[in-house]
Amino acid sequence: MKNNATCHNLFATDDFSEAFDLPQLLVHVPAGFPSPADDYMDKSLDLNAYLVSNKAASFFVRVAGDSMEGAGILNGDILLIDRSLDPAHNKIVVAILNNELTVKKIRYKGNRVFLIADNPEYQPIEITEHMECAIWGVVAAVIRKL
Image (tube, rainbow, N blue to C red; front, side, top):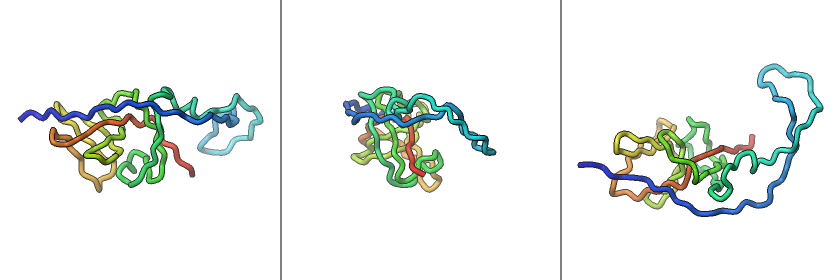
């Protein structure tokens, strides 16, 4: 029996509140040994402008759970989702699966579609024709406070 399961993209518009600018240093910060401090400032950095490439197709969601820890997505992180990006093989997506939101890696194998966690505690989910599945968008960035 041929499996014709698909996950569909959903589109809507969201509005962002006013952007705010923070100063950005001209220098790169080494992650190894410290270097002398430079007092050179570049233009300010607007995180919306830096992270969001398509404002009309983007929104933020907060992560709940640990299924994507191996991909560096942790409980409480904020994800920037871009609905204009193609949910290509191995991209991390936010999907509605049987009326529940989930963040997983999408994989295609022939005409089969899988949603894959990046935590060995979770089994892959094969999307079948008996499931309701829609892709809300592709994860474009992960935001986390340290």
